[in-house]
Image (cartoon, rainbow, N blue to C red; front, side):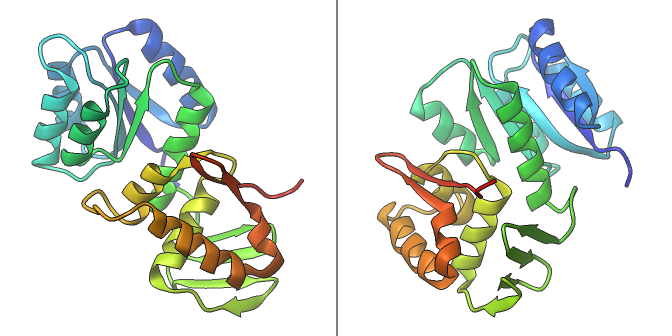
Length: 225
């Protein structure tokens, strides 16, 4: 497989180096830009960039402007980084087509896990078949087997299980699950997730115990060692 290119855009060289070091350890090729204008130049000069990590607050052109410009040409996955914890910023990012939103300070390991999860969903890395803890998911065929036995899942149950497995070990809020499984334009009650999780657990049998409830927040998919 060709090396996967990730563009890291941040006006702080220390932050770029931190993110780059962790990505390089996972065999990603990292391109850098220190401001919005430079980010667009690098992006247009390198057509095979697989993902962009984009800071919001930058000189010359902020992250929102860069995101809007890139979205007019490309659907490349974008992770936005910001020092702000304002929900309005997060909603603005989703409106512009941002795939993930991470507030500073953050764990570089978690950031890399998000990068890998997004690229798996985009079929940039990894196989179409995922196996973990006796669960086998064939994304191309939209089939699930548990202990080698086929399990009938609805479309959303399949998407939900796939999202859990691809984000194994990460705490996922109901809002994040809605944004990624039901898409950003879903305005329904977050309790619909609880209903689908209940049905999914029942269909998974004892493997349903892999889906842990985080009270007041959401869920985490964990497989015992």
